[in-house]
Length: 334
Image (cartoon, rainbow, N blue to C red; front, side, top):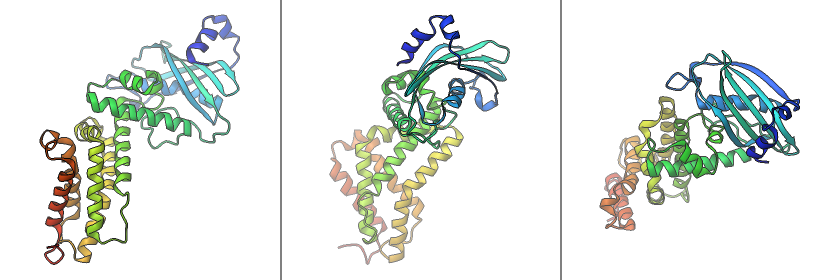
């Protein structure tokens, strides 16, 4: 049953809703982290609050399938008064309506949510509160989150973070805006997940086919090739990573920098091995690893120069240049 269907069956008549026995109430104090930049309770906090009581009743094995906002008017308050009403329940699904009011009783939101209930799924769901990337996710919820982050990547890469709206991102993911806020608390949090996803993809691709028993020179050639291949395949995404970092919050920047260090680690390890074996000069491996990362980005970011050069020629020239700078005179092929 869709949220709209449940709404038409259960909320059209107040008398019909009143006959539904399951109803829960709660008062939730708020902190500064629950507010937006204007001092009003954030939309992400309201969406999270809408799920709290329902999740408590449904228990493990539930995921939010759909979410519809009937009324939404955030404003400053020091606490939320939550009332959740069960509208419909059958095997495998439940629909709850949440009424969220400020501490003075003024209604802030009226939200209807449809839940899929799968008793065989042992993973507990978690409504979005801040970052979701590190929270445990059920398989269904994880697939939906992955689809949302992929859609956000496409929209932000095309339009830029400042011009991309949550409505456009939700539409690209095939969901409603309120459902988006069940996975992330803000557009900024979603941008962090975009960065983490892209970095994870790059890290996995970088290590492909690199044999640990090969000489350092051969492993480095493979790493350079893999990295430039990623930059070719994901030009728009590389542009996003280089362009939108300024929109990340301080904590998100630290998280993304940690991921960058993971991307650089294979380069640093091979360079250290080459120095130890006498193949490479004694250089600062961290600085050179960053230079190698940037050498791939150049292909993505400066297409107005390199389209006429050709991809394979670019890759071969960069590889030869880097090896020439690194190798000792006795190890350099003549």
